[in-house]
Image 1 (cartoon, rainbow, N blue to C red):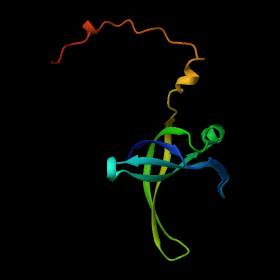
Image 2: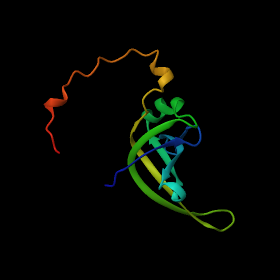
Image 3: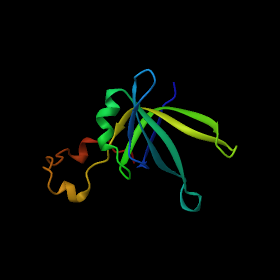
Image 4: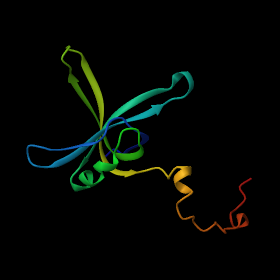
Length: 126
């Protein structure tokens, strides 16, 4: 089994549909950056979440939202209307997480207790 994990922004609002068998699948596209500087590009990944979990998450999967996803990656190849062969990446999402709240949202959220761990408890690797 392969496992792929990436952080990206949702490119379109998630949509939930039913297959011919009656299974529910929620899908959305995810843009993730690869490389840096002049070599920086964007890779688009078609994501799907099967079952009730996808239906529950669908209202929160909005265009522009940042999310971390992991799951099984596969490549799909098809020919478009113009006769051009297109390759796309598909991810069957097993896990997802949302980033921490933005600074403005954190100011109204309850604060966590400060970390009282002493740095001297950790070994010195220098």
